[in-house]
Structure formats: structure tokens, C-alpha cells
Amino acid sequence: MILLDGKVASASVKEKLKTEVAKIIANHLRPPHLAAILVGNNGASETYVASKVKNCKEVGFESTLIRFETSVTEETLLEKIDKLNNDENIDGILVQLPLPKHIQEANIIQAIHPDKDVDGFHPINAGKLVQGLPTIIPATPYGIMLLLEYYHISTKGKHAVVIGRSNIVGRPMSILLSSNLLYGNCTVTLCHSHTANIKEICLQADILVAAIGKPEFIKSDMVKPNAIVLDVGITRVDDVTTQKGFKLKGDVHFDEVSKKVSAITPVPGGVGLMTIAGLLKNTLEAYQKKLAR
Image (cartoon, rainbow, N blue to C red; front, side, top):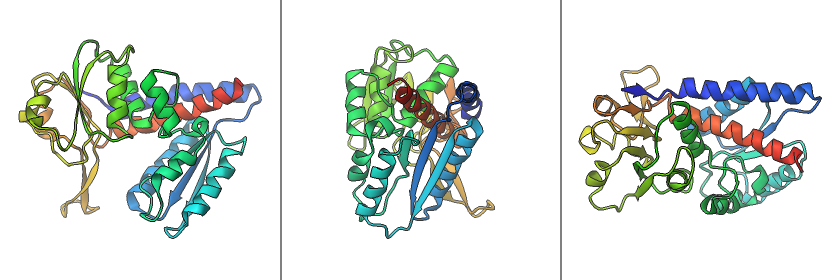
């Protein structure tokens, strides 16, 4: 069994990014600049944004963290995004989700200029992805593709089952795996909460992507021998035996499933780290696109 280690694979991606940034600076140009907006003080969001800022620094990017109270109005948030859209020194913009209920997430996502949408959520970028045009790919699916590339996982002609149909992970993941790419060309089945016979479908998967948001949903009896399992889920589960009072669980029951498959990602330390790698690559690509104009 191969552990698809996101720490190792993301380190390889970041090393290449460092080299690119060094070349940029050697040419007397400014480095790429990512602006992150954080609303409120949700613990998980704080952790994710801090990690993104830290990783920007590691590869030599500039980053700006913009904080708002939970009570911020949608109008104020939109005004800030408009300023960032028009700031030539900002190459990438991300708004950490989820947002407070009084703010329409779709309005915020659509307000970010597609060329600066390094999360890859804007409808224009999503539409280009569907049509196979060059675009910014959502960071998590992009990270998974980079992980497959790093470990030279053969995908051509394989049956991939994706569990979860979100616009952030499931839908774009199904499109990428079915696309005519080196690490694509799969036959893809997309499952969701209303899928009948989900266990039987999962048992057909050569490649199983779990992105349903239910801790340890995938058990060993849902996975065929020697499958490749990519676990996108990460949920805090109460655990009084730990110092923090919780454990992080994926959508896959790792202890059971890892004994049966040929390759699997851990949680934590798998897809989450590759998501950040995808975000960083998107930021560099957005910067390079701007320079090429």
C-alpha cells in the first residue's frame, strides 16, 4: 500500500514555486501577491487562512490578510473586493468560506475578477473548465491532480467514482478526471446523497474520491481490493482523549480501508496540503498571465 503523502508532494510543488519566484526577483520584478479575506473568527477558517499565509511566505509570495467582523455587511465586502480587483499589485484574491448567513456567497464569488479568482470558483472559470479551455482550476481538484502526477498514478481508462457534487470539489473533480489529460481519461460516475446503491457503485471504482463531508462514511466493504482512494473530507470529531479535545477525521475509515487498497491519502496530511499547493500554483499562474499581457 502506498501512502499518498501530501506533505511530500506539496513540498515538491513548493520547491518549484520557490525557484520560479527567485527568477522573478532576479529580473527585478515584484513577487506574486495574494490577498485573503477572513470574515469572523471561525476556528477552522482561522487555521486554514493562517496556513495559506504561511505557505505564501515559504515560497516567496507576498500576502495580505484582510479581516472583517462577523457583522460586516455584504456591501462593505463587495466594496473591498472591487478595490482589490483594481489593485495592480494584487494577483490573487480569495475569500475564506463559509461566510455568515446574511451574506450571499454567490454574490461574493461572482464579484472577484475571474483573472484573480485563485480559488477557481467564478462561473466564468467554471464554464471554461467544462469546455476544456485554459482556466483557473479550483484549488482542491487541482491539488489532487498534482498528487496523481507526483505519484505517477495511472488513470487512463480507469473507472473513477466521485462522491460529492459540490462546485468546489466534486463537479470539477469529475470533469478533470474525465478530460483528455495525462492524468485524466477516466470513465467517471458522480454520486451524491440521493444516489441509490452507492455501496455497489463504490465497489466498481478503480479510483475513489470521497468528498461528501461525513466522517468515516467509506468503510472497507465499500472499496474493492487495490483501489486508489483520495479522501477530501476533514471533520473535527470530539475526542476527550486528545489534548485539543477533538480529532480530525476524513470521509474514509482509514484504518479499515488502508489494509485493502493499493494507495490512499491520509487525513490530515493528504489532500488538504495539496489544496494549498494548488492555490499557490494558481496565484503564480495568475501573476504570469498578467505579465504576459
